[in-house]
Image (tube, rainbow, N blue to C red; front, side, top):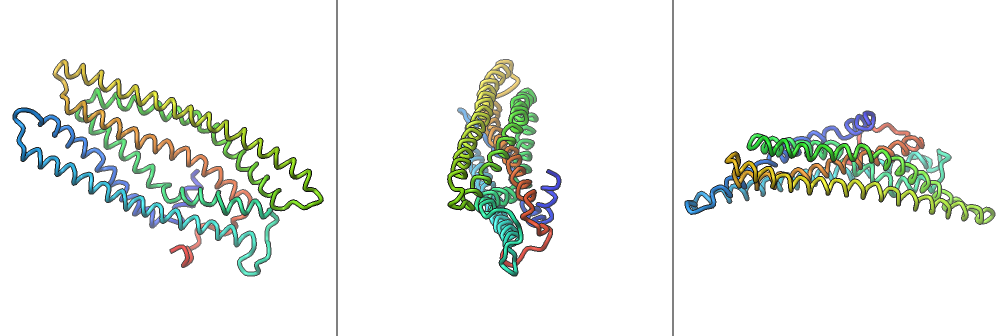
Length: 319
């Protein structure tokens, strides 16, 4: 993984710096709406000052607007970087396979294998580059920001939130490696089948047809195994999320009964759980995607198709 990220930073480091800054801004703003929610809910009552309520609601909406503006910039720049990287990988694979100057093949790999890389694998790897740094930084920053707010407001609820989200990481770490093995197996079999279909001749069509159909069956079995693992992870994390909501209501109710919390804090904690679930799920999804992309990246590089160093300066096409 270190070599993978080193290559990403060498090629896209300048753009990644901008994405890092945008990610930190969005993460820092994540906990601000919770404070507005807490204050607004606690202010509601017979002594409500309408002007104060209006000012708090206006501030709440302003934070939402600013946060979404920065999210828009972050997502747009990440998407553009990913698309530029896809184009770059495809160009490098094509030129390595057919030659930039002569147009003649310079590698012995099948055209079907190259076609698979150009059509699917390059897109997945390139798209990932756009979010390789900014995505995990944004999600981790959001988690730290939200949990810190809840812990500072009510330590018991903050500790409970941590106890809910950490087991999700263990679930993914245990099951994801099994998914990775199946992803790599499926990719290799799909390459083999695609190459056989592209290069078969009439003389050996019968034997190749039988082998290709067997490969399709193997791909089917592998994919069903991947579905079981992914849905199992989703099922377990949904259970933990439900336990988190029930736990906040229980702990919050007990704290309120003893005068150690208020309704605004409990409601803000429920909102915090939702805010935590979203980035945490995205972070876990990022880890799963990273594992899958690393497999495909290793396969692309391992085939020897990309012989050009990724540290070269981008061409005018990719600027």
